Amino acid sequence: MALKITVIGTGYLGATHAAAMAELGFEVLALDVVREKIEMLERGETPMYEPGLEELLRRHVVGFEGSSGRLRFTQDWAEVGAFGDVHFVCVNTPQKHGEYACDMSYVESALASLAPHLARPALVVGKSTVPVGSADRLARMIAELAPAGEDAELAWNPEFLREGFAVQDTLHPDRIVVGVRSERAEALLRQVYETPVGEGTPFVVTDFPTAELVKTSANSFLATKISFINAMAEVCEAADGDVAKLAEAIGYDDRIGKKFLRAGIGFGGGCLPKDIRAFMARAGELGADQALTFLREIDSINMRQRGRMVELARQALGGGSFLGRRIAVLGATFKPDSDDVRDSPALNVAGQIHLQGGQVTVYDPKGMENARRLFPTLGYAPSALEAVRGADAVLHLTEWREFRELDPAALGEVATTRLILDGRNALDPELWRKAGWTYRGMGRPTA
Ligand code: UGA
Image (cartoon, rainbow, N blue to C red; front, side, top):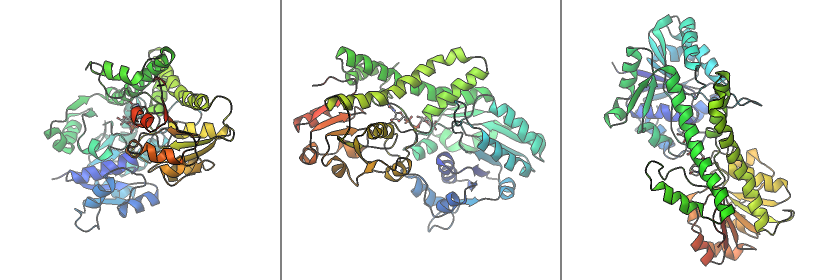
């Protein structure tokens, strides 16, 4: 008989995972404690902008014309417990307020609500990013609370999806990692992931701690690559070198690789910053804090880039104060193809300049609503052209394709001063310079 799957938590990860499981042919029941989220998903809408996700939902959510009807939603834990053979836990683990450690309360409360309804053999699969050691503790908690006892098992299956590519990354992952304690758990997960594994996706079987660590170490490595190249950008700036050329040149060495070597205002979002902090906190608890002290430096190099961008803007405007200066900011989200503004370097820079008296006008293709909610005192314009109108400087802070396709000549017509500062080193300097703009990148020569 085909496996029945439940997904608990329908945020970024859960909504995508639920739709993807239905796409793979499973009957899926998804639960969220927030009623509005469920109602939106039932209408085939997502609470966030993610390319392709609404289409995927509508192909499967029950009630849509032509849909498979394999995806349903509920708020009833008993129904979830009775329905599922495999339960995926996809709730978030944010940074604790005022601490580096991650907040496990959503994971704990999800399992406390689910376990008492596990009356027959079931596999609970954690996908949330958690501190190493959590799975061991949670497995005991489930076995204690579930009427099925030891037959209610836990596995850990970290998720590596990127925002903006969530659908693609979930349906065609570059690896599947499962931390398991029994052959049965492994066999069930092989059954769940039969399609991608059949297409060649590597399936890595580990113990609990390794599975948990794979996730945090992958994100730490990515953060390290970005901070490495940003440190090189600082040196390039001091030595009059060009970090974009440097990244290209070292990237040809396939041991280094080209990806994640774009210097700029650094990483943000809901994952990389909080994951490296939670990792440091956990290593401290385990007595291995020395091993991860370098992540403190990675974090501080990253945070420093935001300030460097502000100083680059100040210098380019002639030094002194931002008072009365008009600044156009292109981009508010932490990365393109997302409406996520959590810990966004772009908004951070916009906010700093605004708080120093600059008149900042922001435009972003998808992040306006979220940005306005987070930073209501910034100015917002309905288009890049309107944001740039009357500006003394234009800051390019999120590398949307729309910005690379802008016509520098047309923008030059409406700007007060043709000064563009590229915080993502993603625009073509020649194109802008030809149209009469002064172009400055980060870690790149001035002319
Ligand atoms: C990241 C990881 O890439 C995913 O593999 C992981 O599953 C996810 O976190 C998670 O833990 O859930 P994501 O947060 O979507 O995914 O963002 P990334 O694509 O990793 O970008 C992170 C930040 O780094 C962005 O602000 C981006 O602008 C910045 N970045 C990226 C650079 O500054 N330079 C680069 O070369 C690449």
